[in-house]
Length: 163
Image 1 (cartoon, rainbow, N blue to C red):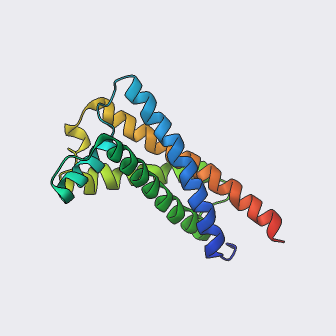
Image 2: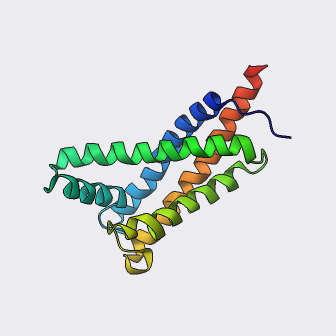
Image 3: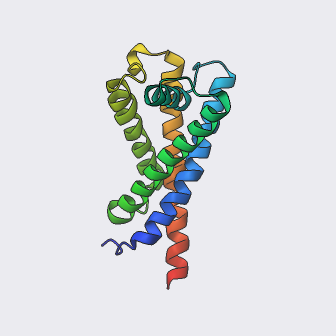
């Protein structure tokens, strides 16, 4: 039987775990960028195109960096919060890394095979640079695995000190 969900605790752990996982994911993307595997990183490309569509002009480089970082972190933290709440209610205590990795892969599928090409921000993976596709899949698997492990650790901490 699942423990009753305390939404505030689950949300707080998801916020923190989502931030940690997003930072780890970003490291994968930075390494890939350094190896010249992907060209413009997807978070930057998506943010640049969204800003151009909204204001009709290319954003200054410093503003684009700030907006990209904020948007990517917000997306990762939001997804982390959803994962933590869902995991607390439906997940297994024995497979947090697997559940997280599958969650990360699900985000990749919904984004890069779903809404991102549907609104014209990037081509679908089969028409994109192969290195970018490999990088984004790997980065989302890392995001999910770290998210699962971090969320589970915070659940244990919360369980230990809640009694």
